[in-house]
Amino acid sequence: MNIDGVKNGIVLDHITAGRAMEIYRHLDLDDLDCCVAIIKNVESKKKGKKDILKVDAEIDIDLDMLGFLDPNITVNIIKNEQRIEKKQLALPQLLRNVITCSNPRCITGVEQEIDHIFELSDPEAGVYRCSYCETAYEGRNG
Amino acid sequence: MEHFIDIKDHSKDEIQQILDAAMRVIENPRGYSEAAKGKILATLFFEPSTRTRLSFESAMLSLGGSVLGFSESASSSAAKGESLADTIKTVACYADLIAMRHPKEGAALLAAGVAEVPVINAGDGGHAHPTQTLTDLLTIQREKGRLDNLTVGLCGDLKFGRTVHSLVEALSHHSGIRIVAISPQELRVPEYLKSGVIAKHHMPFLDTDQMEDALATVDVLYMTRVQRERFFNEEDYVRLKDRFILDTAKMRLMEEDAIVLHPLPRVNEISVKVDADPRAAYFRQVKNGKYVRMALIMKLLELAG
Image (tube, rainbow over the protein chains, first blue to last red):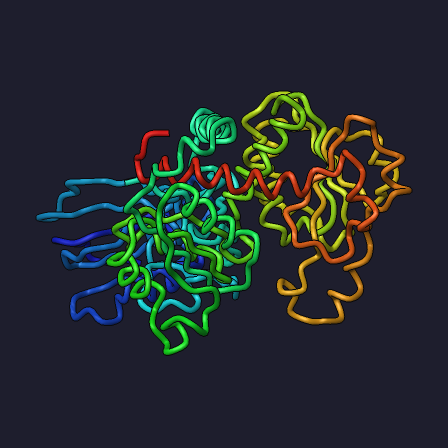
């Protein structure tokens, strides 16, 4: 299967196999007019399989959100068909308005227009806690 | 500008400085009678309180300052749907310092983020009650002469009891602290405390529902009320509320130099007959609350103390 290289844009490599569509939705790539390629289940030396997303446009990406969704991702910035930058993501220390607190007793559930802020309280286990009520976020899948 | 939102925002030394300042007030209360003259404390209590609100108001008045505020949500613009942030920004125009109690967790942190005056967390839902912790620490220090090398029994509602959570955080700074958690299984110490501060500071910890067995081992017994307002249904509350009651028979199981604390109000978890026992320190604890709040107010208003 041959897919053209990106001229000016980004390539998200090492996406956990099966999660490309989830990343696609979170980044709102459906709204773009440019060429976007979703490649699923590519052979990977490290993990057996991986997904790849290629976007042929210079777009801004929330790296914190991306790192939260899948810290395995490598972000490659492409310019004039050359990779000019490579970023290895990791779980971000802080999340702002990426996830919401599920604790019904938390102030974030009743106060309007308040930022939902989570801090990485256990990097090894990937546990995030609401900075207001300290309740752990339970929706993240590794 | 400094706030007082959560006990874990403050180092052991900072907390000790507040306790030392409280001791200076205790030794010479009249010497501080004009320390806060011309200053105004706003007490914003969105949920019921007796001790804490009156303690703050007494503290400020004893420092020569003034007090304004409200004692229930219905008395505030919250009843009209005003956001907490707007209420805080408004009140900050009228006062030099805010002490706030709110039913929602994290409310005090939000207030500190928008206020242009110092904010004291007087309790935010079931989350934290840091000035109660200062009161508890001062009481332990005065009664036992130290804050280290103690076995501390926590009894009752350890899941929703915010005073318990804050006390554990504060005691974690001190060496030789052993925690005995006495509660029904449904009301045990939350996992985030066990795997967080307790594990991190290698504090010996025991979970038990056998109150009688634990009493002989503790230097400090911290009793708590099973709080109706933290339960979503009445049935669970009724089932659990009378499980752990301290009476004179159980007091006989405790060491002669042990002490009993309670953040109050109590319902029936400590028998009134225990009050006469010299080890019952909970009303001395109430008085300590005023002094420690005087010290905290002076610190946050940067008044000489």
